[in-house]
Amino acid sequence: MTTPAARTAATIAPLDAAALDALEPLWRTLIDHLREMDSVVELVPHERSWPRRRAIYEALLDDGTSFALGAWRGELLIGYAMVRIAPPDAVWFTGSHYAELLSLSIAPDERGNGVGGALLDAVEAGLTARGLDQYVIGVDTVNAGAQRFYERRGFRDGFHLLHGWVGGPARPTAPGRGSQTVGAASPEPGVDEVLETPETAMHGED
Image 1 (cartoon, helix red, strand yellow):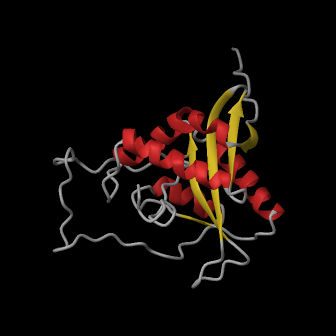
Image 2: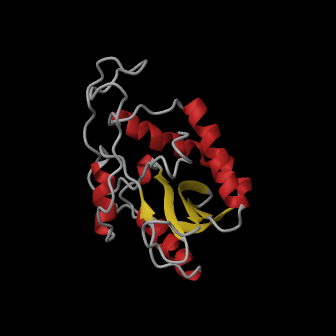
Image 3: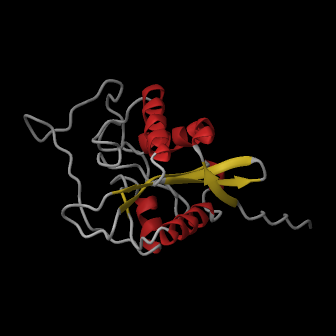
């Protein structure tokens, strides 16, 4: 019987603005994953979502403070993390700056292989090098697998962002949604993804 060869560890390295186009497939998998789970708020179609997201990433990388990391297996990009660093919050104590994991996406066939954990280790090393000792994330309510992933990393529920509709409590039926059934919960550990809150989406642009 032949023993399968062990996977080599992913290589984590910084990303610059020139590498942004390579992130589009990974962004799509993140959005598609949440769409399958029937996110509470309707998601922007990919053809509009990615250009907006790319512009946000580019602006963040141009500011010289925020940073991005990619995970490679050989020459194949299999995941990325984007970290936004901003002035300190006016309400919550966040230290000298406000740091947020804006996006974390892993290729579907790499989930559960430790890539998300390796990216977060590198994110935290980057924050430490910048003198920061805490950061926040936003997780879609339906993404239970991602919530478990971050809780295992020591994150705790600290703030709820509630969505409402003007004129009543009912959730409207968005074009194309129809009578869509709520999707199954995320796979067990390994769903290393986070979708941003309106603050991280630049005031709800996405």
